[in-house]
Length: 94
Image (cartoon, rainbow, N blue to C red; front, side, top):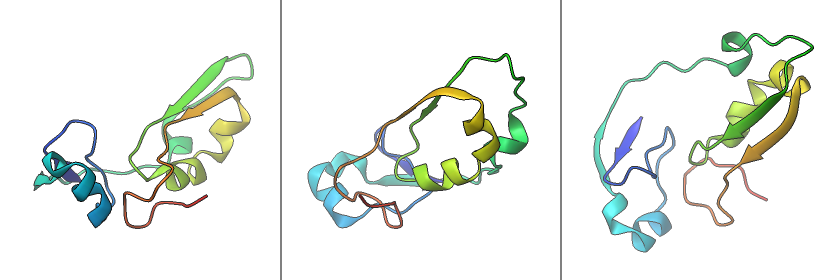
């Protein structure tokens, strides 16, 4: 995990130059090793559960959703914070 100087810009993905131009305070201050597991492996759901999935993962949205196909079937709603311009290398576009 790339740790940013701001609490809102840390990400598994590398920042693009545009991100740093817009917010120089977001530059990296370190890295951390983290375990990554598909949400489907971590979240058991029952058919009676009423789930809202909120995804705020700094450009890693498509990977999170790809690992949550079973969970998504049980969700009543999904809320995702996404950038309209590319800020991270490898983030989904459009």
